[in-house]
Amino acid sequence: DAPAHIAPAGPVNTGGTAGDAEPRLINVLVTPKLSFALRLQPGWKRASDIEEDALRLAFLARFPVKLRAEHLTFRCATPAASLETGTLVYRIGAADVSEDRVLLSVLSELDKSYTAKFEAALERARADCLSASNCFQVVADEVRTAQEATSRRWESEVRSLKETQGKSQKRLFLLEQERDQLRDQLLRATTSSKRAVSELRTNLGGLAEENASLRHELAELKEQLRAVAAAAAALP
Image 1 (cartoon, rainbow, N blue to C red):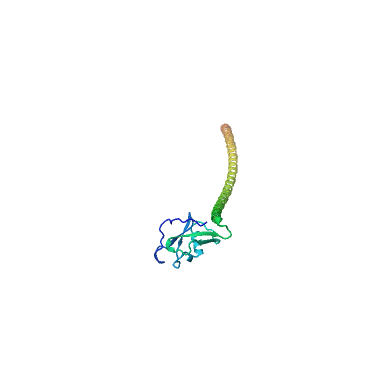
Image 2: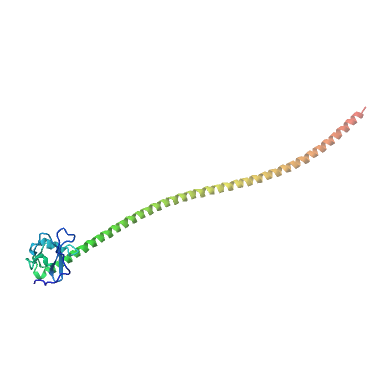
């Protein structure tokens, strides 16, 4: 069935020339609720002058996603109408599709396009997530590698410190042992020297007494010798 006519949404700019700042547009009505704007070309005078490819491009520009439109056909209800009317009524058709299912096929193509767009966006998001996950994994691997290297370095330093501490403790033990030995030797030497001094003092005391006794005996002998000498001198 031919779509019903409705008034355009607003006044359409059909005046001016091709060099004007604002393009000349005409309202194209394909259903009572589906219309699109078509930019007029200088060579167009009547509806029959409009190429079908231009209608397809203008129809596709109405949607935010790309549709497959090469199978769509547009047949003007008034091909001899002047473009000054501001609105043209077209019947939209499609190859190998019945007339009552044309809009349904357009909606099906629109649904496929939206689905493909969402799937592409989902795939990009999945790729971004995978890339972010890979980046996170790379960062985590780098952090783990750095931690392992730091752990190995600290373990080596701790092991070296433990070895140094063990050597120091062993050396300290040997020094303490040597100190104890020297202290024992010094103690024994001190004791021995004290004993020797005591013995020397004792011996010295004995020698002093013996010397005094010898001196006494020597004095007695001298007295006896003087007495003998005196007696010898008294003899005739």
